[in-house]
Length: 455
Image (cartoon, rainbow, N blue to C red):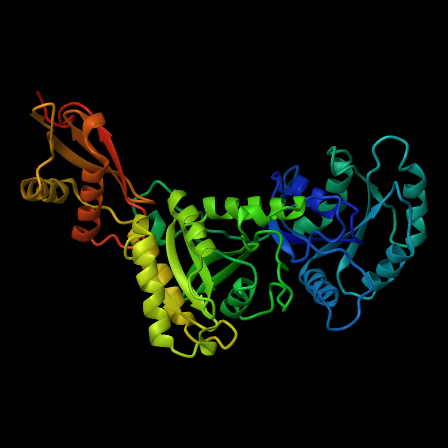
């Protein structure tokens, strides 16, 4: 990955737009509302043949101690110290402001190199602000338009000196291809931590990685972007994705919250395992079940974690109640693991990781065709398929088409006429016979004879 670049500046100068431009995807939420970005977000940036880690940060503002804004600024300062070079972004159309000047002086006191970047320089409206930028004493400003992709050649030239030393001796080992049957054992495991607002998702990730990587606090809805944190645990690579809290759709009225919700759904779609965090004080609520169904519908492995367990008066009863309600209300992921923890005190974190690794193994489990067809014969003898219009349906063959999640194909004489209840019987039988708890099991029906029998 070479070197690290942090994008800093006051609110609403286009930092997230530039971040998205450099990574080539709309990863960061962009909106006209000041202060949208709160946590620092990392991605793989590219300009020409340069590749680097790029960090999007919260807008720099003066802030009192012990406020959300001061915690945001501490995250930005940490990003600057971790970076090889900081891009100080200004809005050329608005011209220099006292805040720009204040934070230029702030950056000069840091050991990190600084490149001054004047954004929104498309057309002639930004010319005055571009020349005004020389007052900051940070050398020649690089004129760009992050939204339109202009000026990236000049940015390339400014970044190139930082790439030379970083590219020597990187010696990265290529990851195996995902379609390799055993690749899942070595590929980074992506975990999305999801749940309602203020259940402790950011705190859980901070405690796992052992640092204040994500903003936390008593305020609800601090997290807006889905933030990925890389972490190595017992020699295994993980990508932990912190997400915005999901409220009921009827309560989501603001555009910004709608963008955050879409970002969370995208994080679920690309996760391997989703950890659904509950507030143990409130038990399992309807919205928790709605989120769990979203995870299962996307085909992800699921683990339920009851957080704030140290505040529960009757822990055994509370855990039994959660497990009972899950079994009743979530048949799509029968046998899902439910564990308890206290993220704040670190109690139970090992149980959480054991449950995640167990769910991931089940999600990747493959069953041989021979075992499947021996099971099918026993299952159909014990409970034969029904007769339709006087003719009994026949299930001739079954095979596993894919993993992630386990997906099976059954060849049926008349697939459209096999009742849904009988398909559920087969799915539950597969789950019990081959130990597939807590993951969605998919059954596809195909017509015709066994395609693997030679004529």
